[in-house]
Length: 132
Image (cartoon, rainbow, N blue to C red; front, side, top):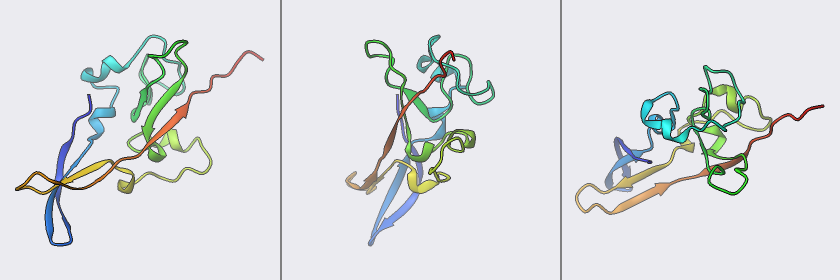
């Protein structure tokens, strides 16, 4: 369920191109159309204003839920791109995400040829405190 939105014109050399990006709405767990990515088994890592009940925070997908044992493996943008700042601020060595972390496809408008594309993801392992 990933879709792209038109983001504007860019130029590669002298070739004008349409840039398409993944909008932040794709990653927003507060939107009704994204409730299918939520699960009763999703652990709580953050408060309700960042992480709705049964969902991960914005910018993250649970990719372990379909595996045996449902390991806490989450896919996100690089440096938690399109996630709330409270996410990446919890980790040492992560910089503030910016548009250089965005996935995009640049398409020449007359032929439909892909002129440029970029995509990067980050794999995250969810850790839960045990009884001590």
